[in-house]
Image 1 (cartoon, rainbow, N blue to C red):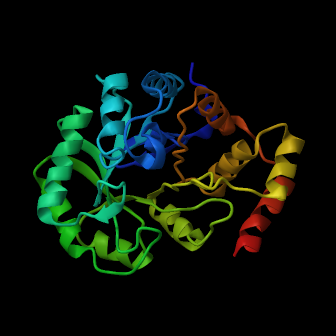
Image 2: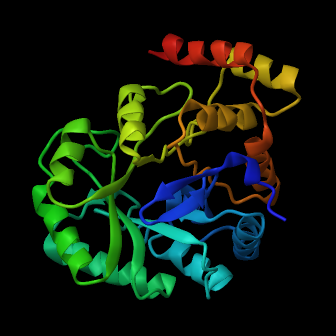
Image 3: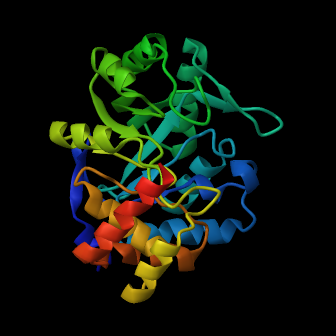
Length: 291
């Protein structure tokens, strides 16, 4: 029986997925580069995630590179009918582990085929264009050229749906003039609230918003308020942070990542955590302080 039923579902492309999913980034080695420290543990985490009801996995062939997709295939292929695997294009890894733009038609086309091969798929459910004008956050610039390439691959039947990652509101508008944008994946959490207005706009449009680094990323969220609320609710701070995101807007789809079975179970249990209104009021102030 699924342990995450209480999180509900939301539309992602032409499918409905559980709102609490799984992000595969941490299945690669340190710095999202190279193989995992414990290959068998990575397989076990993926299998338990799906067995527990996760129906949305986020990945990319530039994690590793190639590592996470190959592990996903080994752990889960042939895939369950209700599983939606979302991947990203637009970056490549240097030999030193650096993150570099990969926007040319040749690079984007090769990346689609790499994802298909390493995941063992004939068509990719959802592909996010990772905008790389600034690797650390959204930055303005036209996405017409790379998104047109991705839309062509969509018309060829290699990609079902297209999303954007690290995107500005202006780029989302531009993107919608080229193809349907089914999701936006940006950094957002209790302390990083720059996308508040965007989330509400996308909710009105019925478009999914997928916050990456929902727990703070490589520097986990630290807040005495968060810790105090968690202690009162007999939960972990990270469970409270995830529960707050689920409460924040109905179009938010979560993809917390971990290579630990224990942390996976804690993350999934956050879907059943009910936050009282007074706790929400306290947690909302974290973003105001951080701003």
